[in-house]
Length: 116
Length: 113
Image 1 (cartoon, rainbow over the protein chains, first blue to last red):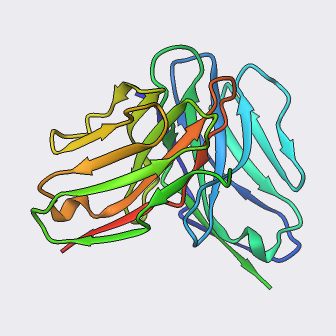
Image 2: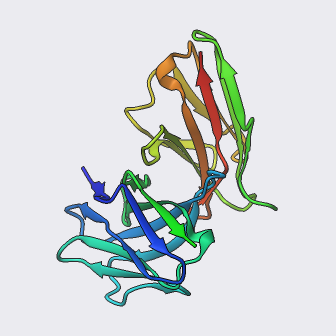
């Protein structure tokens, strides 16, 4: 079964600084999708960034970028120029791409605090 | 269309009672998912619909849980004979068939007392 591990229960960063959140996963599949979701205190999950495993280029969305290391099964999220509004729980998630289960498998999350 | 809508936002019920939650997905999204999230954990998959067909169910979905999507639009999740362990946030998500991006609702928080 696929598993997703987020080894940092909590992280903090100073406003305007850069922070990296870690995620590792375990799968025997070769093609899959990876996601980072943000869950603010209002509880609605918001997609931050996504990556297709077949793409070697790391995904980037404005201040958010990933470091996707397929061989190492690592998918870290870098937040640049951190803002107070970035404070939230961040979840890494996996989904296989071809056939079979449609489910997203989530890690336990990392709580990010942004200090002014 | 303002996104995935879930009702109620909060539900407090006594142990042993039945509860039903509703999810209205984004109208053009044919795929709908239910997840359960307990405190301090990531969401766990419960079930998935493509149109009106329930195509996948987790082992977490015991026989006290049932979900429907009768016309391929809104969905309901019913929990019978609630237990304290059912206390959680129940999240609904939807996506269109040609895109793998999911949109989540704000969830229904269930408290069983």
